Amino acid sequence: MEGALPEGSELVDARFSGPLLTLLVDREDGPVDHEFCRRVASTVGPAVEGEGYDGPVEISSPGIERPLTKPGHFRRFVGHEARVRLDGPVSGQRNFVGVIESAGEEAFVLKLLEGGAEVELPFGSVTRANLKEDI
Image (cartoon, rainbow, N blue to C red; front, side):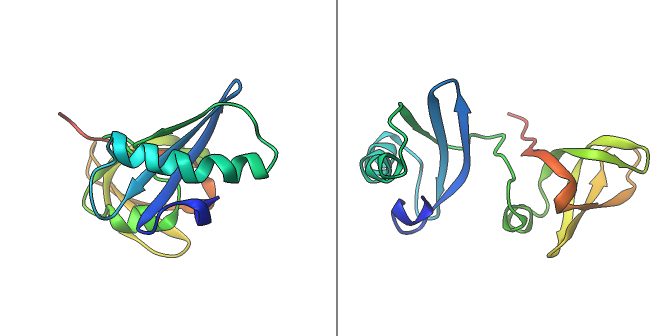
């Protein structure tokens, strides 16, 4: 499906809510505005139909609490706060909030907001991660 997106854009996440397929899309060269979403819908619609899906498709920006779904996202947002949930405990806990200090190929380092300790978390254990932005 990513091949159907305009150049310079990225599929951040795809979610089903009942029959509705929501695609969170970001771009390098400007805002994810109504015109951009309309353009993405016109190219992605035929692609998802070609895959056999004929339900409604919604195109949206990832928002300020952007999901982090790929190792590249963690590398891109080093220095930003994130909320992370793991499938199993690391250092006795599954939920972490901190600043992304670094990110490699297999794991990333989060400096915890509470206490300031650094913890290395494997990408393979992440069930959900989002930027934590205060307005």
